[in-house]
Image 1 (cartoon, each protein chain N blue to C red):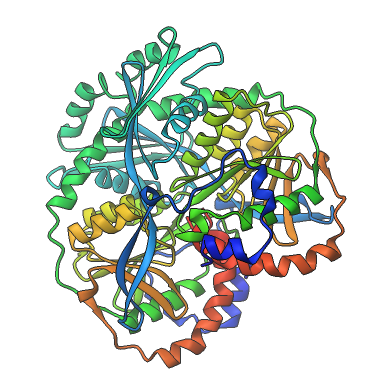
Image 2 (cartoon, each protein chain N blue to C red):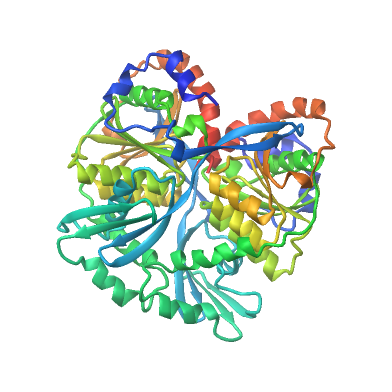
Length: 309
Length: 309
């Protein structure tokens, strides 16, 4: 797999200046080098991403212990609570404290949240608060009012090309997912994590804490277009969801119900739209992309090694 | 992607007779054909896998609602409870009832389980029973006594070659994970699901309900070698875990602690062993595999499209 440094040398990466946040593959806390043997029995060293437990509290209530690579814990915490519908728009977050020693993050709100009350009642009869919260999430789909927007195919190709060339843990170590908040042809916020759900929650947390308007944004994920990804994208108010991966039936059904534009299997020249195709503007000369896509395919080979799972 | 029927015609699939259970990609309940548009705006039809909610009860206790493709709900239910440490070896399962109308599966035990008692206490202070149960799982690693066993590289190449050619939802629709219980060079039980955790739980449930000895088995997964996969494999008592995907640092650490043989990035000719290399017997002529691996790579391209995420 291409190392970030080699990627830097190989191509003009001026577009990296457009990012508000992007991966730091050289952060020593996010990966380690381990020794092993290869198929011939010869010793090899390889880079693997870290995975650590982070326990989330909402005020005094323990919510969940998450497995994460460990960067952006404050964004992850707020995004998780938002996407689980545990934080409502009228809940005012007063403070987010991360304790690196204890691997604990505490989100404090002005007054006790509805969710904390519900939780106490419900956990008497429900084994898992997540399962319970999930029910509420379906309301998000039914009540969805996603804005008019457009996705030009020229933007789509520019985005995937830029994202594939952005130095990341994905290129450096593999076995990790990425989510990227984009505007037109510019990637803005690129978060990674072992679980795709964490990567998307980090973006949601960043958007909420920085008051970013979702209406004109495009959400890109390396992960599959499952019901979970669709629900979270709709919950964030973003009208367009793009992935290099495939679809699930329920993901497609929910996207159509919510009026979300769903673009999948976006690799090189090809992609498929299974919902909200009215937002797509086909302005790209495909003959040009055909040539570009050869590079994408080569990149794709190493990309996909990382994206598996 | 190759359709199951084309795969059947293209190569000798006599080895399929060795399977105790294998995917049924033609089962209409497991996938649907949906209409969309391609990159040129032309109408296309594509196959996508189903994803439905299944609520699990342990006796009278609601445990969790899982998203699953819906096959083998009884195996999934028992395997989930085992791998979450909610069923102990001394718990006797008397009955497993699946209600297709309600999408509910109930696992009944001779007497009330420890876990049900613990759950009532713990959910008062913990938001998620899964998070709580996870703590107990670490004991599984500390107490692990995995058997002596061997993994011949000739078996490994035969297994990946057979698994890649087995008709599956993976080849037919993509966006799905597979887990395969193997013995020597023979795949025995091949389960698929949207979430890799469900696929592994189905295998665990099958093994428990059919009293299959794990000591001489090899576990193959399309998913990454995370802490979760390692813990579940050790919990099942299987000494060897193989994946076409990559590793996480904690997955490697736990595998080494438990003495589990961990083989990753197994594609075509190549693989890497990061734990338990003493079980590997390098008996394969790599020159021969080099030629075979070209086919694997081509298959890999479509495989990986499905395995992403």
